[in-house]
Amino acid sequence: MKLNKYLRNNYLIILLFILIISIINLMLVSFKVESQAIMGVNITVILGFIIYVIYDFGRRKKFYNKFLNDLDLLDKKYLITEMIDKPNFYDGEILYDALYEIDKSMAEKIKEYSLSIKDFKEYIEMWIHEVKLPLASINLMIHNHKELSDKKIIEQLKRIDDDVEQVLYYVRSENAEKDYLIKETELSKVISNVAMKNKDILLENNIDFIVDVGNKKVLTDSKWLEFIVNQIVSNSVKYIRSGVEHYIKISAEENNRSIILKIYDNGIGIEKSDIHKVFNKTFTGNNGRKIETSTGMGLYIAKQLCKKLGHKITINSKENEYTEVSLLFNKNDYLEIAK
Image 1 (cartoon, rainbow, N blue to C red):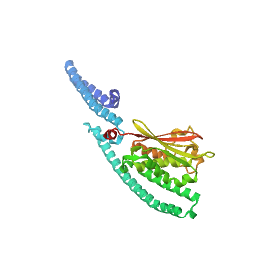
Image 2 (image 1 turned 90 degrees about the horizontal axis):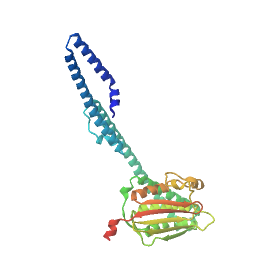
Image 3 (image 1 turned 30 degrees about the horizontal axis):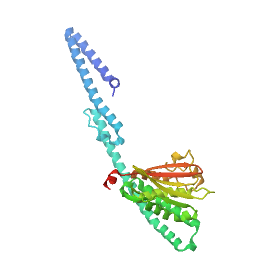
Image 4 (image 1 turned 135 degrees about the vertical axis):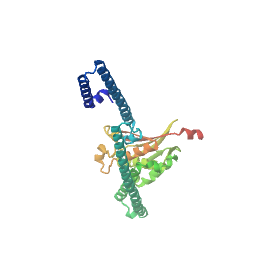
């Protein structure tokens, strides 16, 4: 809050004060009051007015400067009423009370929307679990009756199953931490589950699935990690390159601070201009124009889950040569020492 702006805002009061002083002086002169007395009255009144202006400006400046500073520091601006004290001047009290009512109204509305969204998410989760049952039954029927199986049917069932699972994890991603169970997880078991899930589609496309992760273990949630790896492998299958022997190679490297899981394929790769956008929501890029089933959601969800798990995901690629996705798992020093 600046003094010059404060004075400009109160110019009418200042002009009124000058007018009153002038009238008082005229009255004192008309009553033939001595000049020294008139001067004494003027000094007293003007000094009193200046003291009041300084006091009023000071308390307003203190309140508004704190108000603006606290507001600037807050990520959630609507919490400002929790940071400031009620001011001791009338228009400040009106502002404070108004902000409190606005904040209260917004909090109630947010709670209402949150409950509505929660109910919708719970319904979607329930629906997904229900729809996965007939999908599992159809897959079982196809495996038990090979004469009914068909490559296109298998591919479409796999696509439906992946899309349904993707919706489930996307719905859960905002509150994924409520479903976490962080513990030591064998990478080989996670990769094995992913391989089994993609067995038919890997065989149909003659893709060699090469795994070399040894007995390395990482601190993570096995269920979420399995989903992340499955999304990456699904992309590798989706973007295979014609004219070469297809393969997906999964390996693990270890150093003093971390373990890095690398998933490498010799597919169509990613354009250089698209590489920094692949984790953006719904981004499909140039490859999305080639493959109709691209949604641009798989890597986005994987990235969000990695953030919540404390992992780091990166991607490196060269068009028409390869794509390599790396997952970095930091080691827990305390657990290492405890061993």
